[in-house]
Image 1: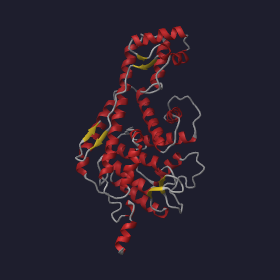
Image 2 (image 1 turned 90 degrees about the horizontal axis):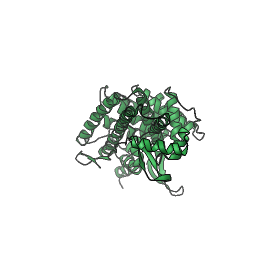
Image 3 (image 1 turned 60 degrees about the vertical axis):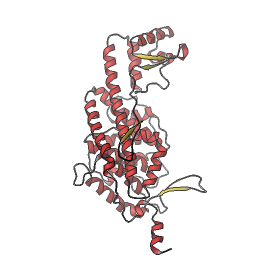
Image 4 (image 1 turned 180 degrees about the vertical axis):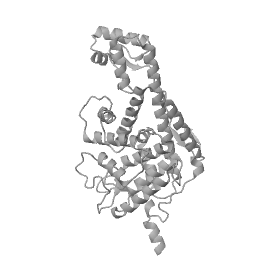
Amino acid sequence: MSDTSTVLSLMTWNWQQPDWPSFTWDRSRLSAAEQRFLLGGGVLLGTVKHLTDEDRDHLRVEAMSTEAVTTSEIEGEILDRSSVQSSIRRQLGLATDNRRVRPEEQGIAEVMVDLYRSFAEPFSDETLFRWHRMVVRGRRDIADVGRYRTGAEPMQVVSGPMHHPQVHFEAPPSSQVPSEMARFISWFERTAATARDPLPALTRAGIAHLYFESIHPFEDGNGRIGRAIAEKSLAQSLGQPTLTVLAAPILARRKEYYASLEAANKQNEITNWLAWFAGIAIEAQQSTTALVEFLIEKTKLLDRLRGKLNSRQEKALVRMFREGPHGFKGGLSAGNYSTITGASPATTTRDLADLVEKAALTRTGERKHARYQVAVPLRETSRVSLNERGDLVES
C-alpha cells in the first residue's frame, strides 16, 4: 500500500478529512423546504397572536416541557413531565404546585428556559458551559463539568457488548477541542441571518447540529446541547423563539436520526443529512402550529359554555385542559371526575352526561369502561421528508 493510500485509509471520520469543516451540499434540493419553513414560521407567529395571555403561557410551558422530556428520552433518560413543567413554570414566574423536582429535571428545564430567553444573544463558550452545568446537574460521575472534556481516552460513540463494541463515531482528541470549538463558534456567529455570511434557516441549524456533534466537546450531554443549538439557530433565523420541539419527531424516528448522523460523520458532503433534518424541522413546526390551533379552539369552547356549566364541570374541564392536548392518559374516567370535583357517583354520572350533551366532552366505552376526552381534537400532523428532487413528501 502506498503512503497516500495509507493516509486515506486512516481518514475514517469527517474531521480527519482534508476539507474539514468545509461542508458542501446541494442548495437546490433544500430550496423548497427552506421556503416552506419560513412560510410556516410566519403562519405560526401570526396564529400565536390570537392566543390569550394564559394560553401563551400554556404554549410556552407545553412546548418547553415536551422538548425537555423528549430530548432527554432520546438519550435514554426518562423524566417526569409534571415535575419538568413545575420547574419551567417556577422559572417563568407562573403559578406552580411547588412539587419536589429532581436535579436532572430541574437542569434540563433550566436549559429550555435559558434557550427561550436568550436565543438572540451571541454564542460563546460560556453559553455552552452554562448549558452543560444544567444538563449534568446532580451527576457525580462527570469529571469535566461546565468545561470541555480533558480526558486522554478517545471520545467514542459505541453500542453493543463491552467485549465487542461497535464504534459508530470517534470525535477529535480532547487536545483539539478548544481550537475546534473556537472555529465552530466563529462559524455560528458569522452565518446568522444578520451576519456577513448568512445561511438559510434549516441549512444553518442542520449544519450547526452536525458540526457540534462531530466535535463532541463535552464528556456527556452533547446530544441534548446539540439539539438546543439547532433550536437556537432556528429561532435566530425567524427572529422569535421557535418552540418547534425538534426532539419530539427525532425521538419518534430515533434509529433514523442516529443512522443519518453516523453517515454524515464520515464525509463533509452533507446533502442527505440536511434533507433529513429539514423534514424533521418542518414536521416539528407543524406540530407546534397544531398545538396553537388546539389552544384557540379550547378558548372558543370555554367561551361557548360560559354560564352553562356548574362549578364542578368547570373545574373538571380546566383540569383536563391543563393536561394538554392529549388529556388524561386513556381518557377521563368517572373516578377521575369524582376525585377532581368531590362529586358523588350519581352526581358524577349526571355531570358527565350533561358535558357530552353540551358537546364539551366525547365519550368512548360504556358504564365502568366509559372514558371521556375534551371535544377539541388535536390536528394530526404528517410525517415530512424530502425526495431526491427536493420535493416535500407528506405521509
